[in-house]
Image (cartoon, rainbow, N blue to C red; front, side, top):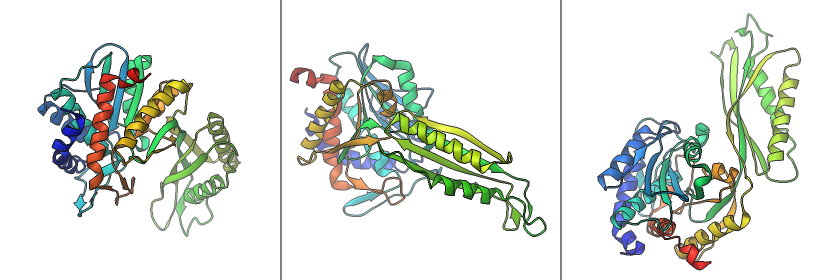
Length: 379
């Protein structure tokens, strides 16, 4: 049976699976409930799988080298530990994380089932389907790091199902993430007025960071995503912290931003004030990837994307995804998704219901291509 026929048969199954999976909470680094649900579903459909030490659910087909990895991440950006809300109308399904990355997760689960039922055997080596952890927030690409730690240069290519049908990421954006903490003596807001306030000092640092002059070459960004601190309205804050990151496509720009951060923090503590800076996350940027091999991978995936998205060619650009790790190690990797929708990283996120079937067709064909290595016949 062809993958297009399978997709038509599984259209309602995909919708049912998406409704189920997107309700299961999966904050980054705490994906256990969703991992258990994925593993049980796969096992119930006769797909052999295992949960590794990083919490990834793995389903391997074939054996030996080379290894081709296709992954979708289980975690979402939201910290909820209770069931996530879901609602629908005639055209859309709304839920936090429904697109990023639950819709793609469901496609990969169904692809694993089809591979098992069709008894696909890789033409060469191993096809490894990974339902991964730690892609969002401070997960620091935990799941992908574990896979690459184990397989390393044995991996021939990596495809991340993440995002939508409109765009492909084939360039890794590196980032550094920090927790910056200010501590002061504190005291009563009236009786000790005039003492340094940790929140005020933190605000000064934030203001300086937002005056940063960015490098001219390459796209570089920065952001303060969380601030916290203080005790009460009538207390001079003893402690406050923020989470700060910067990103760039260029390694030299990351070094520039690191030096700028050190300069700002040094200037903020001329008399030895208690300001600490802890790096809590780092995503590597692009490594020395063979451009021909990367283009070959990208072009065959783009051809499939056009085929199942009405002939529309996706854009190609840079981003921070599970592909960062393989790309940093010189392994061709691309990232794209199997749905249309908007609102990623907001509680109003939705997917267009009509896009699920063509997205499923795309996902099944991408996985089938990995087994058959169809591109070798096209060379």
